[in-house]
Image (tube, rainbow, N blue to C red; front, top):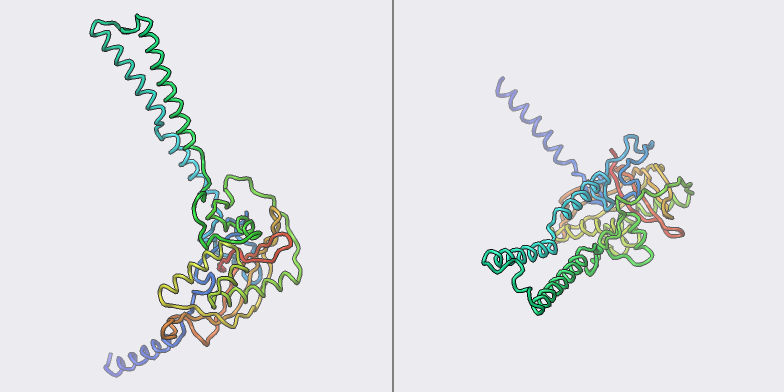
Length: 334
């Protein structure tokens, strides 16, 4: 190959590489961006949402969720029970030690020629022996009562301060527990509990309007780092995830900006009621402008401040009876 051909090929490679460098890197720091799934779908957290025209390939599973997986919770419970059974009982060891001491004392008396029950021939010796037995029995009873009280289960959050990630004023605290959000207080749904009965529900145009409005409002609140706005529109579990992301950006000296959120297409995947709460999973394809900036300089380090990108996600919403819809989960399209 001649030097002229090599030079021409090198120029072509340089042009292609330069064009690739001009293509903006898609920012994935938006709410739920770049993650396979955050949040919960009530009793359907472990099941995939129904496929729709907007997301024909379905959704990716949740990677982070406060609702425990039955396949994970059962072995954990069995392991805890086995560990408890294998744990040595201090009270039992105490009784065995006292019994061994009395037996040893009797054998010593017998070997020394005084007899196994030496010292018990007199009435005073007999009363002294009974008093010792009573004292030993009382000590064993107190020890058993003490260790039994310590082995009783306690609430997971008893006595612990509640962090801002788990705080949610009433009546939203119950909604957070329903959606798997109130894990800080140990109120999340247990996998061992019976699965609730679910009933399909019908949604109205007003509900779909609320979903589209929340899509824009949640992205705006996230972009503005508006914690109060996020608390009003998401479950405590989702707020914890968003707050963790925003705090991480702040530590790195970064800020995430989202703008021009437009819903392009959306359709309902599932809608149901369980335990008095309504759930709805909606597949949505929307466009937005998303960029990650340096706080100090305002320089774009990821994404583009002008070029929009299209995203397809499953958003799950939950509401209590008569309450507003709130975001309880985000899953990326498969």
